[in-house]
Amino acid sequence: MKISVPFIGSPAPQVIFGKGGDELKPDGNTQITVKDGTAELIVPKVKAGDSGLYSCTLKNDLGQETVQMKVVVVDKPDAPEGPLEVSEIKPDSCLLTWKPPKNDNGAPISNYIIEKFDTKKNQWQKVSSFCRVPFYEVTGLDEGAEYKFRVSAENVYGQSVPLETEKSIIAKNPFSKRRDLFVELRKSLVHELVDAPQAPSNLEIGSQTENSVTLKWDKPRNDGGSKITAYQVEIKRPDSDIWEIANDYPIKGNDFTVDNLYTGKPYQFRVKAKNAGGWGEYSTLDRPVTLKPDSGMYFSKK
Image (cartoon, rainbow, N blue to C red; front, side, top):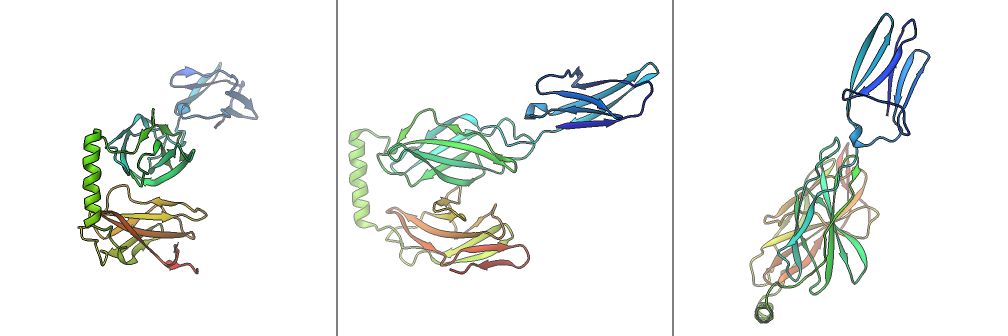
């Protein structure tokens, strides 16, 4: 940060910089220079706490003048407020909740990034970067596997330090052994009578803007013998081999808008449906989709 105050004065004035009513003195991270009719305050390493009301006072034997300047330091946000709680643990899903960061550091929070750590695979994997609210249902867990989770906040200036769960969880039913046995028997009977649904049909691109795509689809031709309860949209970003969940809440209808996309970048999309028998097959767009600011949407060549 550099604050420059040009002046004309004779005799040469004394220069005093201040912040919030307190005088600033030169130190390891604060430099004050006066040269060629310009007084400068230089802070090489700026942090969010350096925001505030600054002043520069010039005084000599003939009088003094003070000018004030409001400084706002923008930066990536603070970490989300903890604790990061895990609840509603099931064999294939759980619910994460947290609090927004205390400081967004000059720019609104655009989204949260959810990651899971599979202790067997010993690696962090992105679950979603489309979450906009301080809670998220993580799906697609492996029953019996042990997981940790972490959440980061993001604004236009970058991604925060992550907030991590204090302890790991095991994806399983939170019941007694007798209840577990009953649930497993019930699940077996359900799966015997109900199949997972087929893929949603007629997946296509509906409306779009230069940074968003709305997907539309019809229900599966065969629902597997059970009512469709939810849909899930996934996206594969450019230069990535990982499919991310794009929706941060269960989709009940037959359309969904994916935003925060970039022009000139190819994206792939797929959708699947869920019933009492579980998640069904994917319906995938046969070509990547690229957005252009001038002529809108076009499909990339295979």
